[in-house]
Amino acid sequence: MKHLYELCLNGGACTGRPVQLTYGSVRTIELYLKSGSALIRISTTAKIDGESALNGGNDLISDVLRKTLQFHLIRYGRNLRITKAELVCDQTVIASSSSARTAPMLYSLVEGKLRLPFSKAWTEKGVTHAIATTSRSAYDGRHNALQALLVAKSNRYEIERFIYYWMAVNGLYSYVAAQGEKPLSLKKGKKQAKWSERDMMRFLCLVNSWEYCSVPQNTPTEVRKKAERQIKWKVAAILKDLPDEEVESFCRECALEETDNTFVRQIQNVIQKTWPEFDPNPTPEAFLTIWFPYAMRCEWFHTDKALPVFCFAEDRSLKVIRIMNRILDSFLTRELPVWLSDAPEIVEKRNQRIQKVIDSGLSL
Image (cartoon, rainbow, N blue to C red):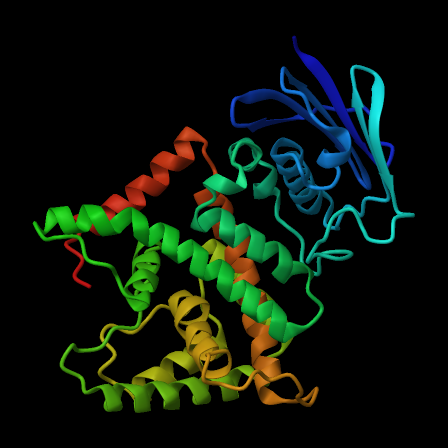
């Protein structure tokens, strides 16, 4: 016998077109979402214990709540703070919860509004369906990247935001590289070997038709590290005084694949003069989205480094991190939905991008 469960959050009601959610074999879940409220309707033969469900004891209810909060953040740009929850089974209330409790019903790393919004691409059918039908047990690097991006977009502190933005980039390049490791190994007739982090980052760049920073294989490690340090700090000196307008212009041009800013040319000159052996020169997107943030991550947020808990508001490093955050947000907001979408035409296009790199005879 099927039961109709309704989970009402902050007085949500059946209005508008619902998002169709799934969880395991349960395919009849409807999410009605409005700003600040939601109603979830679940038709299932399973019996749900109300009190346990509202305290995290039911996997189905936990899953639909998690998806509801994600969709609210993406659609409305702010956290859905649940002040009242009511679970109804066949028109009978079986459990309720309110903000009068000593502790909130749900713990969230996201509070208030997002500092930077999601784009319209995140509301497209393929992306919505992928989020609605993927539960946490099936998450891969793309979904992990989304969780980190949600926190990064909402965090107040630039240093914390950078940590989460890089976690999101890490999740994305780990997923994309996983699509190329095995096919490339088979193509070369070799046993599949685990790629290094630099290999994975380079593969993501090539899939995006960007040229990554590469150096002759016989370059001594100390020579490479010295040149990288010089480039890193010379570029940081350029970025610390960069006006916001130029950063925004770069982000817009990256979306159009037409980068020609003055500061980009300055950075290219720094690379060429400091280390002519860079062959070929990295494209601006590859350098500012992948290489430079990775260098900054290793400089400031490695296990053998002291976390910059306290610093002056005018600190050069803080200004550079703020700019990196804007560039990384622009990249992830634009690129991540492409890899999340399960729309057949989008899947086909990204598979073609991967195959193009594999067919090129990539050597990592």
